[in-house]
Amino acid sequence: MRFNSILSITLVLAGFILSGCMRPSEVRPQSYLPPPENTLNDLINFETASGPEQIHPAAQRIEQLSREVIAILSNPSISKDQKEAHFSKLLARDLDIPLIGRFVMGRHWRRANRKQRQSYMKVFRNYVIHTYSVRLGGAEVDKFEVVNSKVIGKKDILVISNVSKARKKPVRANWRLRRRNGAYLILDLSVEGISMALTLRQEFSAILKRKGGLTTLINMLKKRNA
Image (tube, helix red, strand yellow):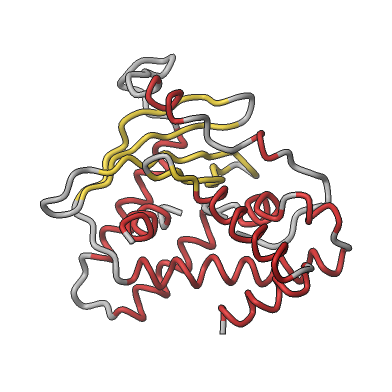
């Protein structure tokens, strides 16, 4: 699918999500999901308070990641397996897996006991890293451009970017980042209005409703990771 292809390309710039379990304090989904697309459109001409020549550290983070991704993808001496290994490291470094993992669980996170949460976080981390490392290993991208950045709420930064493939129309990718322990980590990625975090949340919710129980979801993710 076109979404999966572009999501894979941009996601690696993936805190897309990674470093162990968080403390059990709850996170409200509204605190970091992207604003509606009409709001995003209003941000396109935004300039930072310090002037257009000043680049927000969150935007610099995304630009750095894009350079790393393109360098890996364009290196003919690196095998597909090696590319996947490189992307795994990038994802582990730059995605806020604990926060995203809790969000996509929704109300089921609050109902889970400590042991279930720990088991889920472990398999979710592996699932995200493995899934998108494989997709990135076969991705193609020619150009990545940060268009703008915008403060969202009290804690988050929205970084607006365009991703281009050869002879293809640029695709809009919007990143939501939050500063944690001195670094900006990716919380969500919205590609042409489709939120990565919300998509995973809907998928997991459907599995939990149909199959029943967190243990079932954990076992399913383990199978996907195998």
